[in-house]
Structure formats: C-alpha cells, structure tokens
Image (tube, rainbow, N blue to C red):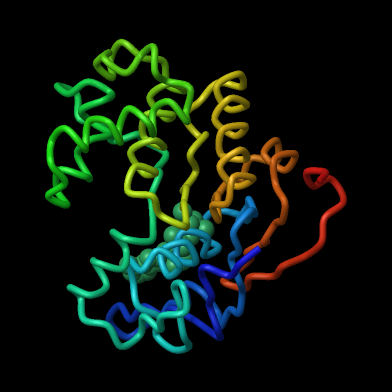
Length: 232
Ligand SMILES: Nc1ncnc2c1ncn2[C@@H]1O[C@H](COP(=O)(O)OP(=O)(O)O)[C@@H](O)[C@H]1O
Ligand SMILES: [Mg+2]
C-alpha cells in the first residue's frame, strides 16, 4: 500500500455575511492504494467537503493537502486542474453521461479533451469499459442502459485517464439493491487492483465492501476500526 492522498490538519470554513460555517474541522487522514474507504455520516456533516479537499476541487482554509507527495496548497488554479486531471477520477450520484453519445463515446471524452488521438482514445475507452464488464453494451446510448450500467460507464470514464485515486460521492444513491451490489463489487475490485477508492455514502449496506470507514459528524472526521469490514 502506498499513500496517494493525504490531509494534514486540513479544514474548510465558509464565510457568509457575518456568520462563519465550519464545513470540516482540522482533519488528518491518509488515503492509500489497494483500499476502499467509506466516508460516512449524516447529511451536512462535511463528507463532500472532505472528498472535495482530497479531489483538489477546493483549497483548505488551513492545513495541508498532498496528492502523490505534491503539496497542492501553493498551486495555481491551472496547476490544480492539471493535478486533478492526472491523478483523480470522479464519480457522482447522477451519472452525468452525455445523452446523444454512446457509452464508448462518453468514456472517450476525457481523453479527447486531453488531446489524445481519436484511435488511441477509442481503444483506451474500450479497455476501461472492459474492466467494468460493459463491453457488450458499449455502443448503447445511456437511455438504453439501466441505472447500474450507466454508473459503470461513468466509472469507466473516471478510470480512463488512469488516475491513482477514484472519488465517488453517493455513487449508489440512485440505484436498486442489485445494481448497488454490482457497482460496489466493481469498485472493490478496482481497489484490490491498486487504486485508492473513496466512497461517500450514508448507506449502511455498503459497509460490507469497505476496507476502512471514516465517520464524519459535525465537521469532525474520525478514523475508527469497524467490526464488519471486508475480509482480506
Ligand atoms: N460552498 C459552501 N458555502 C457555504 N457553506 C457550505 C459550502 N459547502 C458546504 N457548506 C456547508 O458545510 C457543511 C458541510 O457540507 P457538506 O460537506 O456538503 O456535507 P455532506 O456532504 O456531509 O452533506 C454544511 O453545513 C454545508 O451547508
Ligand atoms: Mg454531500
């Protein structure tokens, strides 16, 4: 296991008018390869804020964030965007697939944005879809796919640039129980294959897929051992 993302005393505060909201209290936590980490807690507790700090979407108010040993605090917005592109894949609750494009074309998009030649983008996208067991449906439009299949296309799109960290915010919230199991099994396999996978959820059923759980409550994140975690 290798540390790929690290927060050291990182916190986030928002000022709105006279009031200050502490979205996340100072938090120190490592995210490592070969681990599926669940981030759990009630609504408004700071889960998305923790994920956004790790994903270099926001800067910490205080404290440090490292991605693959690079301190991101001092980076410009442009350097931050590049760090995100090279290291991090995002998966959201709403799959955000482009409706007029096939699964394959959707997965090709990040590579085309990075100026990867079309033919290479196509073969790398097909490879990412194969990892998600979606080869047979890759030429379908999103509307022809179930919610679980659409989410697997969205995960392939997050994976296609070969990021070391995969961040998922409530990825199973819109799925039925069967699709939830399929998607979580795929995410667990990606972690076992060497990615660092972090999944925000408040669904207790996801615990069985976790190597580790971080609980967030009122902006306080704590890393506690849990009894029903995935066996190794
Ligand atoms: N951009 C923002 N501006 C002001 N307050 C915010 C902002 N983002 C989050 N917050 C506040 O910070 C707290 C934590 O939010 P969030 O991390 O989204 O919680 P969760 O994902 O656990 O529901 C909430 O009280 C929320 O209203
Ligand atoms: Mg949230």
